[in-house]
Length: 113
Length: 115
Image (cartoon, rainbow over the protein chains, first blue to last red):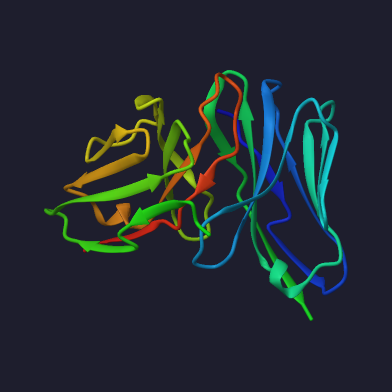
């Protein structure tokens, strides 16, 4: 399968500021884009996902946007809090390989008070 | 509030040992997954079971043997592992509805160390 490029690899933000993580893909068959948060020593936790027929989805302080034409999707966290500190992984699923998620390399987010 | 339960949480074994990892979910999901995760890396898919049948094997070495006894249980049998197999092994589950990708929910994992 083709890779998902995720940037940046590390992100430091002041508490209250916004954080944005971007992922790009090249496979046009990609149709499902989840985001996972993994705190140190814990399991990946699904925080939001979006399908290819939707351009934006929001859940409280978290939003995901999808640009199918440009083949990129982004995670937006507003009003960041120290408990948002974690590694965030984007992933993609495709129409022709059910159940197979391909993950980005991850972004270490550090929110400083 | 983990709905996917994995046992044991930690496992240390020698290269000649045989052990099994267990995973259980009671969400009525019909798809279950095994992932391997090394430190500071994303999860890597190993196996996918859909309706108790193996649907994806990502060219995993035969020293890892998956088993799905029923729709709620998933095992990973380990034999003659190598030190490089030390990692966090994650189980996940999702609804198994046709060809549409569904959210995957992870367990807390088993941290495996090979001596």
